Image (tube, rainbow, N blue to C red; front, side):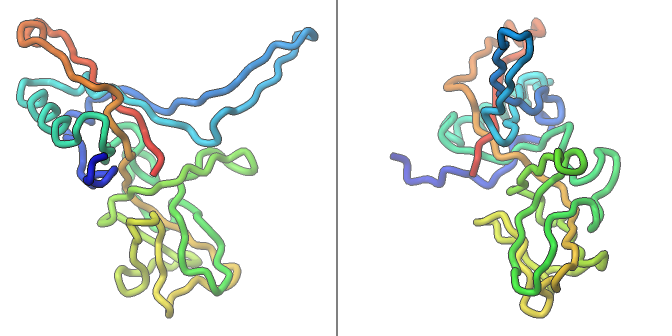
Length: 216
């Protein structure tokens, strides 16, 4: 067994990731009943994102960067950060994160740790996606609509993926805790090898570089 950490806190080459394809995957079981109706059951409570970074490789230098990154991660052994080109902010892609983008909790006067989430949809049917790898330098937090400053009021615990409030800034009972951020997706290579010939690459053949989201 490797003595290296199972997650390497490094970012996949951004020039390649911004040309990647992919998105969320859901696994549902659908059974057709004799009445003609369907019985549907969600196999996973959370979506799982898959990407193909091969479509982002534009040059030999890009391919070399990916090969170096692949070797440093020992192939599929270690997970890493990936910047989703479609969904990497607490807000819409063209906007800048604000401290009130996402509602993550309601204070009780005691709890000082809160996990980050991104909410998709509204009401009871909304999906609350856990965000464990934010770009900490972009993290903005507010309590009851008032933005707080780091590290005086709060810090981010990378080991648990939580905002940690300082003793004097613990959210009071009934006060909304909101935040905004950019974030990365923890992924690993979903292949044991990267194979492409120079001749094929010059002819425009795109290598397949599959990535899959992992739970930390």
